[in-house]
Length: 625
Image 1 (cartoon, rainbow, N blue to C red):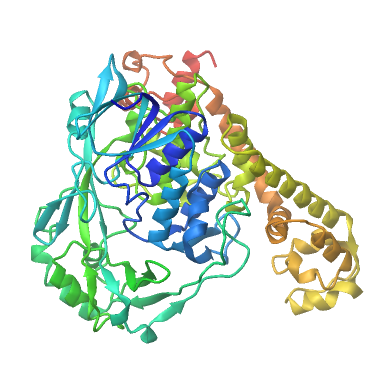
Image 2: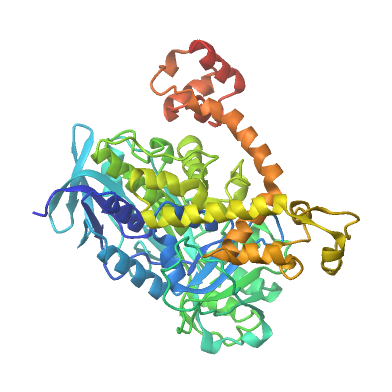
């Protein structure tokens, strides 16, 4: 029998890796159980990390002391900052990764993390005592005891893959499904559902004519995912991606296979992701469109394997191939493997507390796609929060949660446990009410002090943060105090397409102009250049942070005021104060929803669909407010 652990993590995907390393770094003894130690943190679908809102989540994971950002930087083969044409609240980092290196780097992190063991096996059941989880039972017949268990099973719970009429049980291509856990949890009262996701074919680059496609290169500047500065040993390799489009010929070829499509013959009944639909869904939903955008993305630094983003499919393999060969540049394409759809079990996340501990079974935590989410980034964030809270609970310490105005991670988890899901959840900037407060550039300012306080972020991170804040503030103060005269700066302003000065002003007022950046003025204003040159480390990052605060300080302060007003409701705790079923002054829907969700605060109750302002007023009156 293996030793007893503080935390057992089931599954070594993106959620499992963050959960295991986080709990171990907080001092708990951790066992990470995976069915295949050679496929840790697999990029099962797109070989990329980040994107709109997702990039902010990765930076938040890093700011808290996690590893997703570090591993991404070490395996990156292209980096881009999306939405640069918009305000900084919308800037979103994204990296194309070498998926083999990504997995190898994560395994290296895990193997070199103290307090963390690995075991290759499948978990077939959980061990319960008095509505508490006390361990797991494996396929090899081993009972392993633990104080807490975190399930991060991804798409493996009763996974079923579809390629045309061909079906195969599995959690991923060529990997077996996980059986037994869903049935056991359902038997003790958990609500279990089914969801669907999919992936496109993988293509051989030697058979692709890239010359007729639009090339998309990466960016070579100071941006990266991690706030640490010494974790990448080599220069970033920039492999290009390519853009092409479908056309009516492609659509006609694909429609020939619709009669045998599991999506349309009734085989697949579960709900798929709205914001990453299959190509056949696009042809039905957007039937008037004559073309759909496709991205061809390399799977690694040296491999010929390419991922065709925008062409997920469960059609028969030959229909997929015939359709692809009608795409410009793919007329002679060869496939490494076809795309497929996969159905899997998930558990309604309204069955969780904000710590991601289940309400039905104490000390049991869920993270990742098991909660109805999609995306590596969302999974990693949940894994980290589950790992933190499982470890803190073992150590009899206060739980750790994030509010909606503190992090996209807070928005993600609050959405899940309060509103639930009826389709795979994906994070967007539009889901956050306070997105100008949740920028990618200041995730360290928002979160690293919190992580340092609980012992997760180390002294190195705090030293880097304090240095950044010190020099950022010095630069802002300099701009507020330094006066500029028209004769020294007007030529530069006119070159930038903005009106010249008629009289002297503070430098701060010049930088407020949208056309003007601090870097544009260094040659014209020698004292500013000297100030910038005095910054010892991460100069561009600190200059950008200062400039964002100068240009958007009014918006930021206004959003803080709004957040502060609404956050008062978060301080009114109502956990276990009421038997909602007896409160006849509430609407029937409110009674049902409140009894099911059991919100922790009035603020959380206000976000439950079906709970009206009048219902909230009833609760406040009953509390004497």
